[in-house]
Image 1 (cartoon, rainbow, N blue to C red):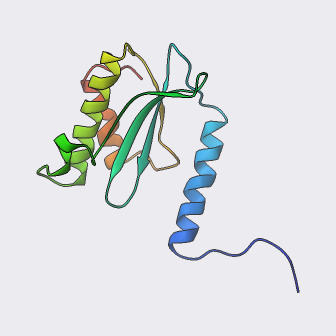
Image 2: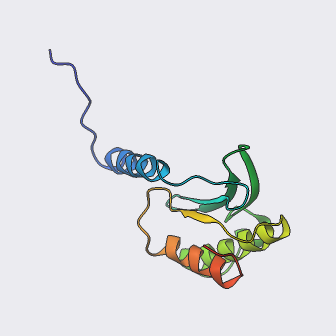
Length: 127
């Protein structure tokens, strides 16, 4: 019997690929006190954005579609991602953060990820 890595299928393969890409991205991207990391986590239903200082290991600001202000909102998932982007930018600015490095979390920079990033930029967060 051969020992090796199990071949994944379907959604498990997709999740493993996203995880591999995220690890590869994190080799280059680190959040500091001056420029914390804006990391985006996306599921089929929700999206979460966090501003993290990796040196201290603290989350400075966060927002998601699970927040009370967005949860029952109108519109599709891209519209909700825009609301999350604007909310996380507002909370980050309140925490004293002006500029961030963007971590797309292994996801493709399109659709909801791009909508969140654009809304955060429009709200005054610098990438």
